[in-house]
Length: 417
Image 1 (cartoon, rainbow, N blue to C red):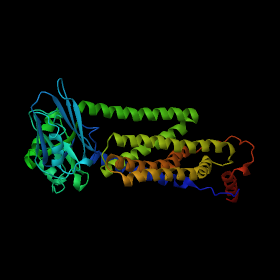
Image 2: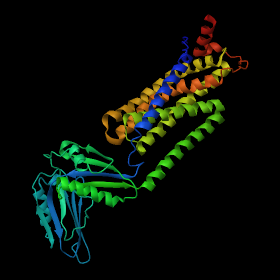
Image 3: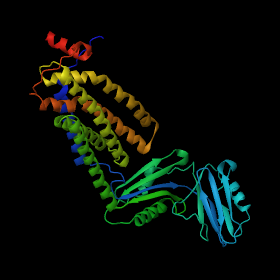
Image 4: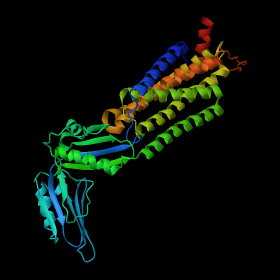
């Protein structure tokens, strides 16, 4: 087997530590000055998705039966039930109708006494939707059905302007131009209820765009009590993970190896948090999942290197512990790079071909993977080199040292110095 060169990783321990400290300090300053862009998962508030569209169909019912009108992704469904009623289900797939008038014709052809159907705007049927706050059960009140307005000129800036009287509001445009919707995130202070916030928001939007044109697709509210519990639970989860990893590494290796692994993990978590703060990425439960994923990845990469260090301590004839580290890092370099690069292929595919929370998740993972590979090589090794700078070697076991390529080259390098 051809001899391989042993790289002097130890020359870069101090510069790597300085670089990491600088990045983390920048991140801490950013957190203190700009803060972290907490999502609704971690702060009290409301997240609501709305559309601005014209009603195309209106339905009402004055009979004794119970009629449910449901709008699905691929069609609409009318369910008639009740004692003495002609129980039935009418499915109208969008593939079978072209315009809203066709949907109306099918509904009226059922000859349901008391059912009123009125076409407000006869447009092509690609998809229909209703206000999520309206009941699907038809009654004397009018149930309005909407369709995407492909010619709508409403933008995210218009929605922000309509909500300018509210504090801590962010608006994001979702979907394509033909099916545009807007995601509204609004933080709240005090004990304001979700219904109150939703009503005030809805009134402001209706005032700006018209009472019949604002459609609430979905709405969620996070109370202050729940958000604080989630934050404390997340912190406990991360700390418990670090403690368990330290115990595991101590049992398998030694306390200084275990502490080096934990330092590398904390380093990666801080680098990711620094990036999240500097890029103003939203910190949500998905982002937390990315951090926990990197903690698992980082400890695996670090344990592989530490295991090689422990093995080389018994076979490498070295003058200092740094020489053992250089030998072990050289032997595991290929594995570290290949593992990181192949994992990045999958993560980058998510980054380039997805949007929303998965896009942010993949971006956080990309930063974490690079940091994990870097910390397992330089940060954990730098700590061990510092702790064991006066380490005294036991007499190595007698083995055929030429059978291990990187050990053989290490011996030749030492003899040539």
